[in-house]
Length: 118
Image 1 (tube, helix red, strand yellow):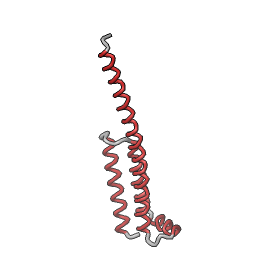
Image 2 (tube, one colour; image 1 turned 45 degrees about the vertical axis):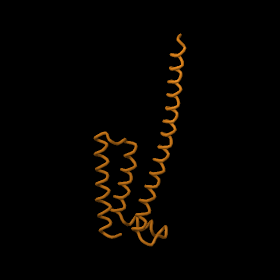
Image 3 (cartoon, one colour; image 1 turned 120 degrees about the vertical axis):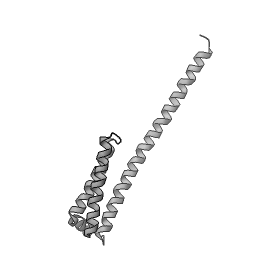
């Protein structure tokens, strides 16, 4: 891995980790969501500081270029993150649908009680 790529990985991951920590301090990001990004930054720092790890994995997996392996790892982790976010979004949509239906039934019951004159 070239020195430029290593420096880019280290600087980029440190800046992203600092940004996530800043968002946590301002209470604009949940801690559970930030753990992924801190882990992600940590992996990139490790790959930047110890390029031998990436070289070894690239040789083990038969990837021709170490940089290709780094990009592959980044893409893989981001795909996992998108999948997990999609699962959460589907759960939240189901909850909103349930709450909307429950609210509509409750409101309909209130209107029916008002109309009976009891």
